[in-house]
Image (tube, rainbow, N blue to C red):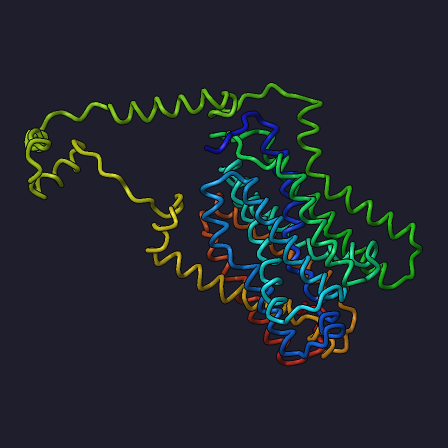
Length: 446
């Protein structure tokens, strides 16, 4: 049984901690930073490197098992599995790249798949937990966390350039040790909380602050990357940039700190002000009352069902009449917009249409990311870190904007999110055509 934390601050503490885990979950985006070392140090050809990119994509995007485990166990279990996978996978890659051990190619392929699969475990844990903690703002929460996930490539690039001095072996060691440490540190704060059943007057302002903090962080990372590329900065200045980045990553934690220092006695609707035990008791009483609710006025169908327990051979017509008059309550299947179980979603056409669109759209974007360095070299651009930072910043804007825009129009104009998904696919189609035509618009396409 999952322990639920009560109070108004824990959801925001969990969201602030989830930002760090979401940044850590972007470790799969670092493949372009060390792929050239795999090719040069280990002597891999382009075909072998491409197959390692496939392993990177498979590990990052296979999230079926994390989703199942997340519904059965508390978040700390999912985070622990992700941290262990990251430690084992990147640890094996570091042993090979540092020439500590001579490992076969197939083992490196499998290790990279395991390492990047940690992204699925980490992001699934924080996304599911926080979307349940903020049930009335799921789109906003998803946009914020996915936006920080998009910024993770720029964060890793900043660390790779400044602290690790562009060393691929040091980067792999950092991924093998640093990411698990972050997960083990933050897992205590990422937990299921008692959600509010009504709107909080201050919640909208808190979300705006978090979104603004993420935009400032993204702009800061892009600016510092450009400055580092154009000028040769001293080590103290570079480390000052790194410290400022860490402080910006801690900005979402200002919300629970402010709620602690300046508590307000605003009332919230729903069960948020009740203790966890009281809310569970109320839920059980409500469920019991629903089961013992008196039936409607006796009718002919009720009389027909009087001997239902004595004789199971009730005609189908009598059963339908009883259901129509309310004498029998039939369990209703979930409708669009409601929560589905996995087995219920598998038989829906909507699920497979979304799966197909997401598979094609995201798959093509990941393919571009894995070959971003080769595309840049073909266009005469050899600065991989600059490309990855720009890609990361624009990826962040798309993720954050997708959550904000879709949530706004869904609430105000009831425009479904699939419309905006279609718009993004059209933009990607135009971008790929520009890439293929080799026009002088490479930076715009990135």
